[in-house]
Image 1 (spheres, rainbow, N blue to C red):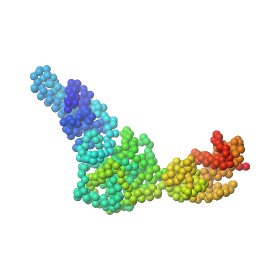
Image 2: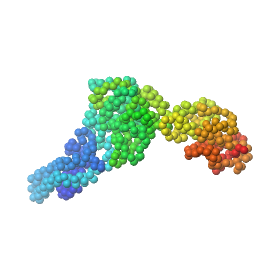
Image 3: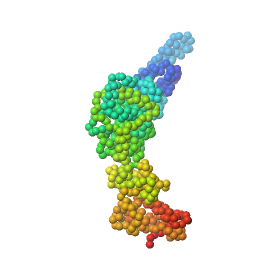
Image 4: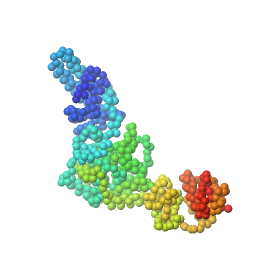
Length: 601
């Protein structure tokens, strides 16, 4: 306590508001207190570790429940009139004793003045006006702008009412202020005992919920991953028959078992459009430190926004702002669970996020769960500690099957390939069995308009990536997909010089197909290599594009314009190959012109 006595004596010699505030701040400042000091346990027991974080928000460490809790300045005001007063009272007793034993008159006079000054300051500490002045000064001295960022960030620690479980060391211990824990399960930790009557009853209940032992073990591992913040980029979906009470009852048990670490989110957060980055979102801000997040069942017409799901389940840093608060950046550690009767719809176009998992559950569930939360967490910790820190486990076949089936049902591009594209044997040497990726993209966008019930946003790069994911072969120049053809395509080695009216009407809906047909019927390659360099055999691409627009007579988007130029480049390469077969000269492209072609007469 030497540091505190030093600040007390300094305030006695110069009793300004600031000097007294320095003493108060030194008493409550976690960074100054020596843990080895014999007085430290008393300080903690008296709830005297306090932090100010701004916006009139204070935190005090409660040793009785092993965590920091949010409070107001009233706790400091009360302690000034009691705890701080007692410090000066004890210091007065010290000087009175020194005065009685001192023989030197000068020293006696000094001790008498110090004792009297203690009485004067004690009187000031009990005046509300003075206390307000001290608190204003203490705010600046105790302010910690990074305290909120430190809270609940130690992923290996799980807070209980009677202590903290450390997953890294595999032990339960007494909590410390430096654990920076503000969340708790809100019940005492119970050591796992397989012979305990309640523990056996709980495990029988879980076996009724998950009759399949593999699925039961997998679910317990997922919950263990949530408890210890294991890395899992998943959105877990628990589903069952409509009207079954198992889902909601089991979720209720999980929420009680995780206590403060369990949060709920409105499903609209995953189905609505992404909010502005600077918009307040109290629902997300309160997820800091959460380990388990459950959501309500979506309506039948709700569609999940895959981008938002990926953002919240990627174990990445996110920034959120509560109402009338400053933004807070934190790592979202929680595992997400959705309960529903039917598989939810999702806005899926590119296959970027295929990590949802599904569970079929028995409907017969006991509702008497009030005594289970502590025993459930004990079981969760016991099971996950077996595989910690590797945290590797297998996915049951039934879960993998349901997951794969859901991916197939919601993968629009895979449906398109199944309905519209024929995959050919890769041993087929026919080089004509290929499709221009830009053409396939155009066909896919047309197919979406007729078959997708939701709006989608797809790029050509998405299409290329999905083709590779579905084991299609992409050409080296990345312009073609090989060994395939359109299912409804009528192949013919000879084309009519002019398309029929019916054909034109059909292809008008596909601008790439229309342009390809138009290009082949307007221009011919110059087979005579001696005429390739003739100025009349070079046609600017912009001229060709303008000529097509004048005949197409329909608006063309920027995306369609890019596809048209891709087709021209493709046609250029085709002409190039024809000329190379008839001559040894090299073929060259000049200033955005298609060389070696001429218009049909």
